[in-house]
Image (cartoon, rainbow, N blue to C red; front, side, top):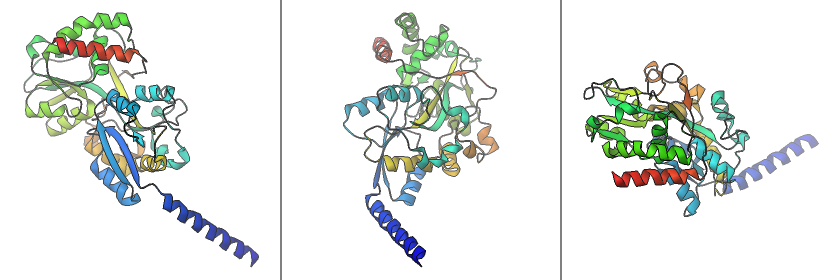
Length: 344
Ligand code: N2P
C-alpha cells in the first residue's frame, strides 16, 4: 500500500513537473538558414507536431550570416553554417554545446561526417546536407568538352556565365587553377590570382548564390559554377544540363545546424535538430533540395533515380577538399573579389 502511495505521489509530482515544463515550453524558433535549403513542408510539419512557430530568415553566404549574427540585431536559435564557419564560431565560443541526449536521431548520420576538424568533439553541430561546387553546362548550347574552370572562363563564353556570388568560393576556384588548395590563402597566392580574376570576372553575366539554376533554366546563360543541389535540380528538369567536378580540384561543403551561444530558445533548437534527423523528414529535404544527404537512413528512402543523379551523388570517389577557417584572411578575400568586380 505504502509503495503504491509513493508511486502515486511520484506520478503526481511527475505530472506537476510536466505541467510546469509545458508552461515554459518553447513557443517559437528563430531559424536563420540558407535560402533554397529548408522545405516549407518540413517547417510546417515541425510546427504541426510541436506547436512551435518557426521564424525562418534566409541568407546566401556564410559571411552574410556571420555579419548579421555578430551585429546582434537579432538573436537566433539555429543557424546553418558550413564547416569553416562552424570552426570560426567555435573558436570564438559563439556556439552552444548540444545536449545530444535530446537529439537521439543523430545516430542516423554517417560516421564519415562526425568528429571532423570543425567539430572535433561532435557536440556543436548536426549535419544538414553536404555537397560540392561544380560546373553546369547546357550541352545544347555548349558543344566543347568542359572539364575545368579554365574551360569555363573563356572569352567565347563572355556574357553566358553564371557563378555563385561568394568570394571565398570564387577565390578557391582561381587558387585551384594555380595548383593551390582552397585553404592556401596567403598574401602571395592572393596576389597570384589577381590577374586570373581580372580575366574571369568580366566574363560573368550573373552572380547568384540563391538560385543560380534560374539563369540556366531561363536560357539567360549557358554555363556556370554552382552548388551541386542546384545542378541536380537542373538535371532533373532536363538531362541536357551536365554536372562536372572541376578537373583542377573540387571541394565539398558540410552545412550543419548549430545553436548560437545566445540563442533564446535552445530547447526548440534541439527539438528541430532531432526532427530533421528523422529519416522521412530528411528524405523530404533531399527531394526538394537534392544535395548529398549525410543521413544514412534517409538515403535508404531515396529512389534509384535520385541516387543516380550525378550532381547529388558524384560517381567514383573524387578527392574533395573542405574549407577551413582562415581567420583574418577572409577579409582579404572579400576585398580582392570586390575590387576585381568593380574593375570589371
Ligand atoms: C543552398 C545553398 C547551399 C549551401 N541554397 C552551400 N554551402
